[in-house]
Length: 459
Image 1 (cartoon, rainbow, N blue to C red):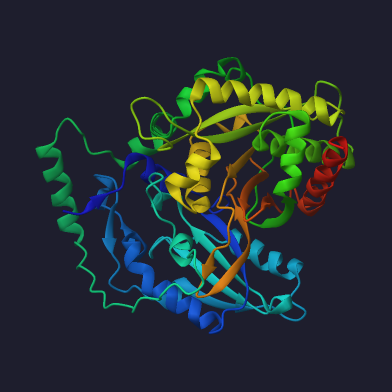
Image 2: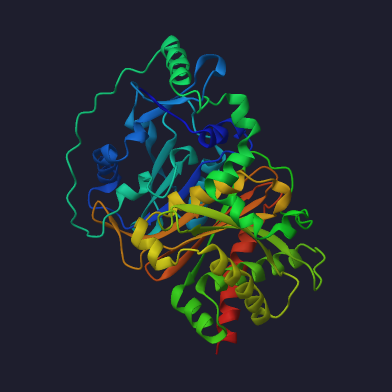
């Protein structure tokens, strides 16, 4: 019997549009492997058995009698999914981000397994980059494994397994898919097979139920009754993206936390808030004392009836961009996030890392899923923060130096910000609509400036 997509997973596929591809991206910067990018490609191929879903494609049921199913791709070609790219000299970060922007703009091919990886040579100082694209339909919980995870090891001399022979199962034809759908309905009438129309119609209620959004929104009911504040971040989204990055030292963020209280996550939200304030002012937007920007902030949760961290709940947080004093901004955000931690039993960074290992792509994908399940009128942007291990990781013996998330945009959302901590630093990935937020590189610079200003307030 084939495995059928859940209603939620099918909904994300149905609602995806050419202007808003849903894949979650990642940019890994590595030292040059001794065997070059060929060694990385061989490692991916050898470890594909650890992620069997990455050799499967989505097959539609004729007449949309039921949700699509996962089937082995008999024409799977590793060379299509793992591609080589090169940057022209001098191989600057700007050149790399231009390539990442173009890759982020292109939707994944629905007729093939829903992931791609690009091995990029030619970076300055002999480095290489690995750019990943993974559809959230592949991610159904924290137990899911992303292709980027199987690439990384905690030791530089980890053995590379031999690439085994894979024999795909013959996918069912259209008649077989229809028969299986009808048979499933007869055997389990209480679990009526979801039609495509039902999946689209019920996506918001389904997403709320299955990702824990409902719990978070019930606790911020007053905010959900009001539309998000007017912001240039909300505009019709085109097909082109611009990606920018920023960095911060984790020790500096901890210094700010010790001086002013709160958590590192509170400090990061304060940094984003201050940067957004200066960005709005640079564009001539009116910013007064009461001006705010509403962020959808996914938080990994636990409850008494579930395993710790097995769901992501999303909360609406008003970022006080109208507040000129950075210490007051931090105090206000700490108060707001403290209520979430107390009532929602959020999972701490250390527990999350112990539970999932290095899983930023998976958790950013879960955040994107939660965001897509809500009305875009309720928030201005998505801000995800996923902790990673504070020790080096390696791929084919090459040390990973940096890692940047690229979180997709929802319809009408011009900007998303993903944050991932790794080996003593925090890496910001900003994904923006090229037309409405074309100056996203200015915002990235302001993030780094805001960190410096907060460090000064900490003495």
